[in-house]
Length: 159
Length: 384
Ligand SMILES: [Zn+2]
Image 1: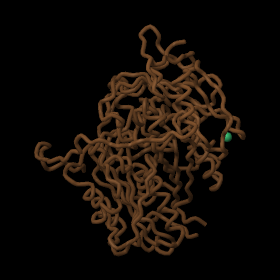
Image 2: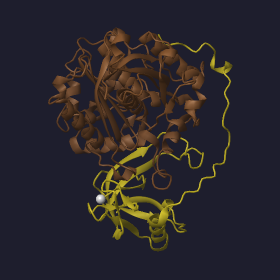
Image 3: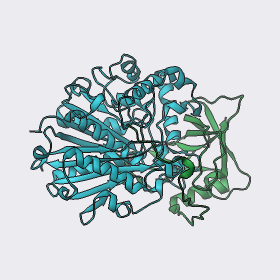
């Protein structure tokens, strides 16, 4: 049978990790740096095409994993795209990037940018007048002050 | 290569919290039970393989930290961890290491204390910090998105998925180790709070504290230890994607490819008829429909029919998750290994109230990573 804890919850002592600063700094490589610079400076999306399978990868990365080939051919994609799958996130959880509760609800979208072979993940605007559906056309909405990161896009919404 | 078998299994009393024990003591509880099941002592064991998702508890040297409870003192002790598939990777590792002949009797342990951190936050740290983490919200979000695509493609409903939940929860009532042991109705599943459309609270696995230990022995020892060892017929796995955006939403490609490889190797043509029992790492309701299609049990979009017809219920032609499955119990690093232990105990005839009759072939899976899959098949007959 399931063993019951023999003490009341208030009798157990817990040691918590507290407010810790995590000093991570991630490089995004040559490809990621170009992608983010184009997003920041020109509001453009760029992908890389595999010389072997011809897939266009967004986000761009140096290697096509299945073919194990280096990619060098840049292709402009988007900014328009098609919603390929989505959910609306409603439960609260801790964002490991900030240590804070993530603001919910939010739309979580997988978008096939025009010309890309892989999907781009971003926020989807929740709009009572526009219930999202797989297959609809969407466009990005950019931030005013862009810094070269994914959050330079605020969200995607109905095109 | 030597033929190899599972000869003993032990599980803790899984629960939403096990505040009464530390992680080390939880591991010890499972190990003691596995040794008792095999009628061995820790001196009989050649080596220990242990795994969990280390970012859940934030303890990175688990194989060292837990050594007093895991039995590895002065023995080769190895850590294996592959995210959600950790437990099934552990089972495959146990198989490979004993089949090699370099280990004769190996103790394999999977464990997790999900009560010790925020599960969704911790899972998110397994994904790419630059490209995945801005919007990704752990396993529930990725699975919800998969469900949205599956429903759209085939017109599958939330009620179809709920039928699979009531199956697993009903089975769990007979499993003394299960975490959630209360039956639920389709109406309760449909009315449960919405977490991430279309996933509601009862569509998704719980967060569990628990450990599982499994003893593998090769052909030189297996039959001396266990009267009816659960022989490993084979194993396969596939890790197809890097970033979440690379995923093809249907079918679950990793499971389709891994199962096709193993069926071909073992000459299995009709898995629905040839396999007697399955323990699937199906962490949410819709997986019980769509992933059995990837396993070749039903045509695309027809998994729900098999579930509604009761084919996979206890007493059906192919019972699935007689343990109650992952929807009833999910100590993540142990979950894939529990699937292996449940298949082994069914073959050994030690599954208690949940015992199925005449189990000759059983199959278990593991799921995790970026839509990755592991699969093992077990037999009552010593492989030729
Ligand atoms: Zn390629």
